Figure 1: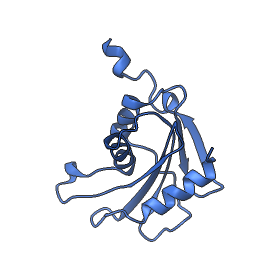
Figure 2: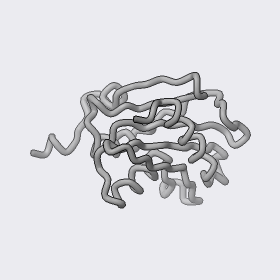
Figure 3: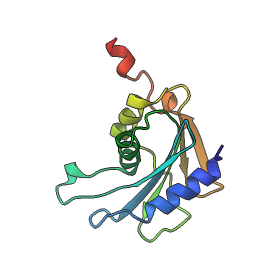
Figure 4: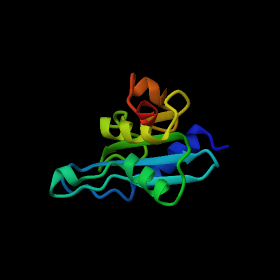
Length: 140
């Protein structure tokens, strides 16, 4: 199975496709499915800010639209457009992205990897990032 550093590399690669003419803050994500397939995503901005899409949601929506819905890990990197493979801070998923991940992932077992570089990362479970979450199981 792919390791954390390899997933971070793919997130860095995905970040290159980001469209960020307004914030100049580029984010990349690499989402690992239970079967080992990887979906990459980047953030895409829009002049109407509320219509912007985060990298994590881009990757997740690509996966779900192609029939995958079981995930085990996501790596997220981000920084200003002048930063390349080493970033000044961690790009943590926003609340909306955390909720989207909660829709499809087991909060106790889904790994969320945020990294400044290949060697500087933090790993959380989705439950740690979104405690006392509301998800599909609450509607049964």
